[in-house]
Amino acid sequence: MNFSKSKELPSKEKELPLTTMIDVVFLLLVFFMVTTTISKPESQLPSALQVDRKGSAALDLQPQILWIERRDDRAAFRIGQQIVADPVVLTQILAQLPKDAGVFVRGSSDVTVDSIAAGLQACSNAGFTKVSYVPVR
Image (cartoon, rainbow, N blue to C red; front, side, top):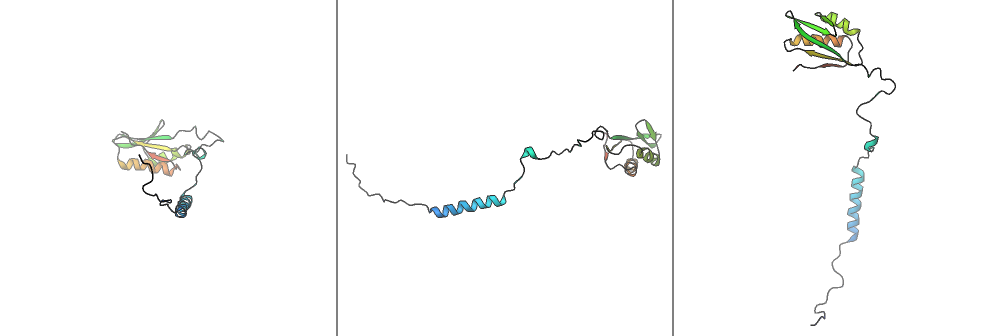
């Protein structure tokens, strides 16, 4: 067995130009640095629910529930134990309640849309800013 070199291998094989590769890496580094948005760590982000730590009196309040029912072929508004048929009287009753927690308006399935709208308007006229309509299933 003859292990002598029959062909002579070139001393330098093909090389990639190192300067070009450094330029490409540098451009990618600059691109990622420019397009990256730096944000706070997730542990330092504020929660979606803001809690008033000074006093919990406002948090203890529950929203009022205004029921709109049909009685004697007329719409009747029930808030707590009081039942009224006139939206003006309802506005006066609602004006005396605390406004922070808001009010839920629920209408039974047999009331008309205009009675529900009258209840919503009475809540707005009384000064409630958080008024929600909750349909009955």
